[in-house]
Length: 133
Ligand SMILES: [Cu+2]
Image (cartoon, protein in one colour):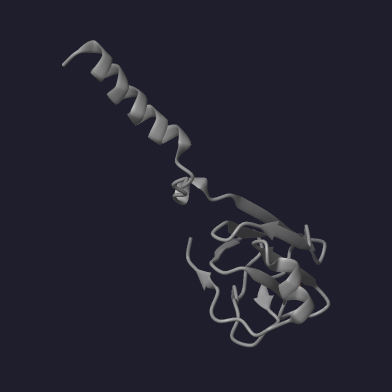
C-alpha cells in the first residue's frame, strides 16, 4: 500500500472515532450518589442524577430506616438496618419523592434526567423505575 493511502486510512479511522456523536455509555460511566441516613435525616435530601446512575443509601443511625417511594408500587428498600447499605438504579427520567416507612417525617427526593423538573410539577404516575445496579 502506498504511504499516502495508508495515511488516508489511518486519518479516516481516527477521524470517525473522534467525531462520532455517539458516546458509548457503559456501566463504568455510572455515577454513585450516596445518601447518608443520620440523625433521622436523609443527607442530602435531594439527589439530582442522570438516568442509569446509582443511589446508595447508607444507614448510619442506631435505628432501622427505609427509603420508600411515596408513590404506591414505587421503589422500596425494605428495612435498612443500622450500619447497612442499600443501592438502586433509576432507569427512567422523573422525580421520585420518598420517605422512611418507620419515620414518615423523614423525606427525600431523587430526580433523574432532564425531565425531572417538569415531572415534579405535573406529578404523573410512573411505570416501574427500579432495577439492581
Ligand atoms: Cu426511619
